[in-house]
Length: 366
Image (cartoon, rainbow, N blue to C red; front, side, top):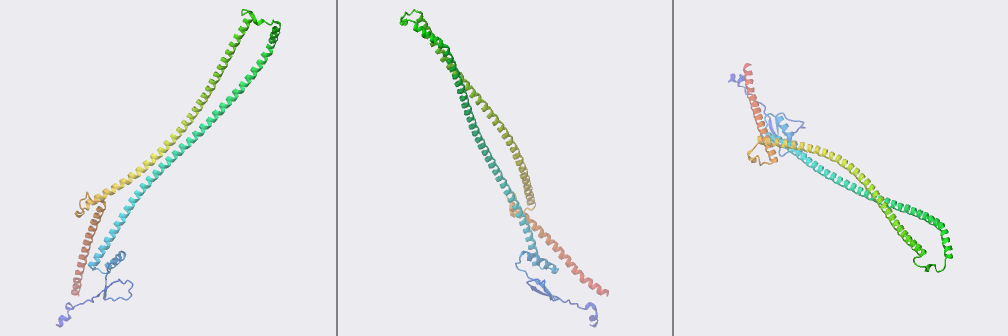
């Protein structure tokens, strides 16, 4: 008995076991702590930030963690992944909304530019109409003024001609005054019954000849005056027609030049608009291609991460595909974490089993 009591093999070494105390707080700022007491935190329905902090501290506190802490860590990781996925989904949704908003703004700007172009065209048309009316009024006034000036000039010329004719007639009267005096003297010298002579007499023949000549002269003068009047009228009409032709020619030339300038301006605007539309089409085409690539990538991931309880893949909407991918990734992460934890647990258990064997060998050596 004494030999056994003195043999170090049979000496029982009892460790000073620590007491387990459940607390509701971690107690970071606890100044006095007993070395023999092991504080185990109790957590119920904590917030997201607190759960992440406390789970990390609990896992750092001791090597052998409880199952609840592991579940809490898994929940924290799941919440992080879901939060990231929700953030990405919101970001994608915002980008789609921004794209729709930009397309709507582009459509509104295009409609506004069309309305402005129509208003500007109407304004130009109104200005052209006003200009044409003003030009027509000015040309009509110019024509009337020219006609009045021509009439005044013609009347002045007629007045001059009449005065000249009056002078000529007065000169003729003065010249014929001698013949009048001679005839008066001759009449005085003739007998009183010279008119009662026979029709075959020389005086009667002369008088008749003179009357026929006078009537012929009057008819010829009237015909000459009518022909002169018609000639003047035709000349005036020809002048008016010539002026109208010149004015219409000038107006048509001005309109042609204005239309050519408008056509060149519209061609420049059309080229600018075509370039702008081509740039916008290229931008939308690139965005459409990016969206198509994203959708193809999502469909490929959905095919790789297919789960039967989500239904057929062809009839599956986009959000359900994303949910299926998320669930698949989370399951893979959980499996990986579990395998890593089992490996760590096995390594830790193997290290704990090897430690007492080493201590026994050391005792035997001693």
